[in-house]
Length: 318
Ligand code: 5GP
Ligand code: MN
Figure (cartoon, rainbow, N blue to C red):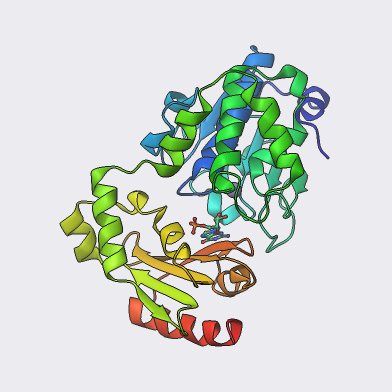
C-alpha cells in the first residue's frame, strides 16, 4: 500500500493537484476533497488544488467544495493525484497537469482496463469505494473532521448506504471510526442518497414511464430522450440515481438506463443485483466500472444501443 505522506516527503512536494473522473459522483468528489483536506490540514505550506469537471450541488457541504476548479488553470503542480479513475482519458481536461507533474499517483477501485499510468499506483478492485482505498493510503492519526466527512461521503455513496455486495467488514469499521469525528451522518445519507429535487423527481417519473421489462422480467430497460429532458427541465447531472431505482424492481437482475449527455452522445448506466457481470459489457464498449455497476458513453442511437444490449442480456441472463 502506498502512503501519501511518504510520497510527499520523499519527493519534497510543494504543490499538489488532485482530480477524479469526469462527471464526478460522491465517491469521486469525496475522495478528491478528503485528500485536499488532509493535505491542507497537515501540510499548510503545500499549495493544494482540487480539479473536477463538475460540482454537483448536493455535495456543497463538503469542506473545499468552493475551492474546486473546473478547468485547467495553467498551474504546474509538482505532484498530481488521480482518484476513482482507471484511465487517463477520463481525467480530461486535466491531462496537461498530470503530464507536467514530476510525481503522479493513481488510487482506484475500478477493474483495470489498461497499464498503470502513474509513478505510484494502488488499485484495489475489491474495494467498494475509492474512499476506502484512500483511507489506507493516509495516516488516520492525522485526520480532522473535514477529511473524515469527505471519506464517509464516498463510503456511503458507492456502497448504496452500506448495502451493495462489495461492502465488507473493513468498510463498516472505517465508517464506525469516521462517525466519531462528529459530523451529521444522518443528514449526509439523506442529502446525498435519498433526497431528490422536484425536477429530478419529474425526470424519474419519465424514466419509470419509459421502463420496459425484458427477458421475463429479469432485465429493466429505460431511457430518457432529449425531449423528455427538456420537458422535465433536467440536465444529465440530475439523472445519476435513476438506474438504482430500476435495479430495485422485484425480479430484476440487470438494469439499464440510457440518457443523452452532450452533442449527440448517450450515456449508458448498468447495474446488476446478484450474478450478472455488467462490467464486461461496458468494457467491451470502451467504458468501465465494476461487476455490479458499470457504464459507457457512445454516439450510437437509443435503438442501436438497445439492440446490442439485448443480445448481451440474452446470453448473460440465460
Ligand atoms: P454510473 O453508471 O454511475 O455512471 O457508473 C457506474 C460505474 O461505472 C462507476 O464506477 C463509473 O466510474 C464507471 N463508469 C461509468 N461510465 C464509464 C466510462 O465511460 N468509462 C469507464 N472507464 N468507467 C465508467
Ligand atoms: Mn468510486
